[in-house]
Image 1: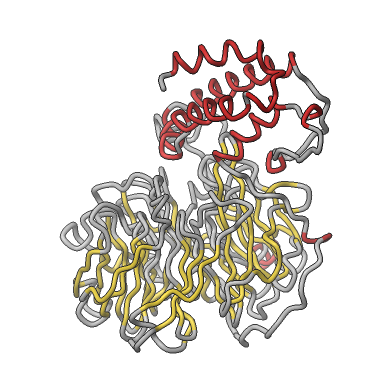
Image 2 (image 1 turned 180 degrees about the vertical axis):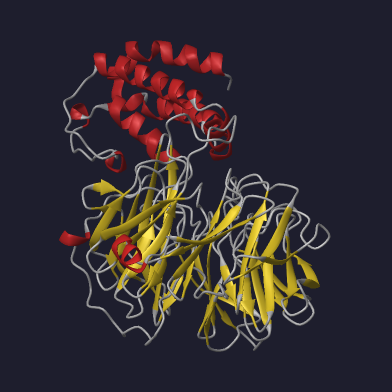
Length: 551
């Protein structure tokens, strides 16, 4: 069906709209076909980046059509959240506004946006088994080495244990890594409905996949934006801290929820987005707020904030300090009261920041910055710690468009001096994944679809390389155990690899095969905990695997 035909059909709708149910299927089918052509997810991603005015024009066109319908057959309705635009049932078809129903059908067909849940007013089941006792907080990819390994047996010969997806938002993507604490799996989702994004926070039973509490889609009165940030848990497991906002979002926040109930504890607003995953040290959370670049120039628009790092006191949500860093999309780590974070597009550096309050630093005569170390490309990846080294992946691309150049940089944690960096033969494309560290071995995902094993003792020497995908980068953080490496490609392939030799042992497709992942946004790194593997993907929801037949 071409666009001229669609325009012709739309022109005659006002004449026959009162026929109600008789024309609804044809009207809905025609409009859905047009919407499917114009708002395919991949096309929206490209259009928003390259021609931001096109979605606005399209939305104005849709609004104009709606206004024409409404002129002929209007009914008065209250103001609702964009999430609540769903058709309501009526026992009398003559009372139904079929124009509204048709338009709502289109909206639901394209996005089926999630219902808003206010945890403060929702009854929840009593919490089950308590979380494991930990002395350290759980941050993105488990620990400061981003190992993705909580503990327990290494699963092999994987078989699916359960699969969960948000039934209220079947188009929700899962772009951030999960957090596994005891018998609970925490995570977040992202749903794109231009010009808005929406997100949800959830908690699942690790054994059954059943929700502990309803998906939280509101932070106070505000809809949660799409989430790229991975959850961090306090050392006692009682609070979850996470950012909101995808790359084009503004006015996003860092949020804190109670893990037992999903209730919002506090929300700290920023003018930008928080794709960075927070690091926690005691009662302090540190995170980056990234910039929104002009797609044409890849620079912030005049007057825009280029980005900053900030710290919040977890117990009461008070912001303690803020420091300018260009595009800190990277996820920081904290060691000995120093936060290390990468500076991304237009930044090209790693920055070490003291985390004490401004008053404490002034009293001790200290600057916020301990050191800055330049990197050859944008430092967008999460920071990992390996002994006295800071490791970070860099590249000239981004998570949607991998670039042809990348490297892993090793920096002296105390001085900021670069110890070594990988060459083009080892990392032939952007390195945007968190780097997993265990026993002097680092595993990095690369933009050419491979993972590489690097010897940390011998100056970053390549140990082996293994291919995960033929067509998509590995931007998700790998997990590493005593014997295995687990890696997820952006197009949804989960690979199980021998840690010693890089041999491919298994390969599983975790996206929904009916929707294999048009955006290539499977960025959620696998987590291994207590003999199970947990992973989320763009279209396949959250999957738990168990071992059948031993490793």
